[in-house]
Length: 96
Image (cartoon, rainbow, N blue to C red; front, side, top):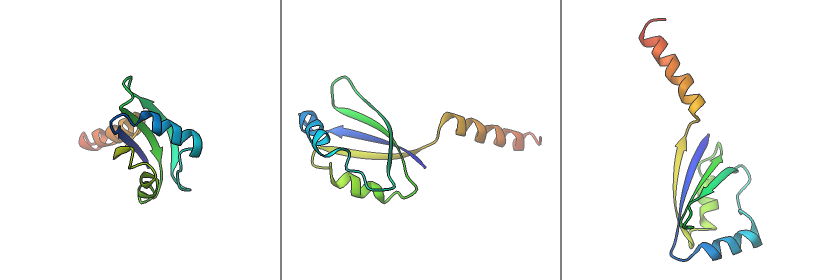
């Protein structure tokens, strides 16, 4: 399953976040997969697309970073998945 992780950096934490990342990497448990990320221009928010079949793995990963940022983890679907789902629902609704 896909998840959008929203990381809100604590005040002035960006340098330490990137120092830790450079020294230790993402520190992700086996089974939690990083796909891509985007960071706002002020270095305050990071959006990461991740994938796992075990939601509990997020707790293990977040424990490594919670001193530097706050997390929100949101289950998401791709646009293609939603389009397919909606098309199926529309076909059922009109009796096709």
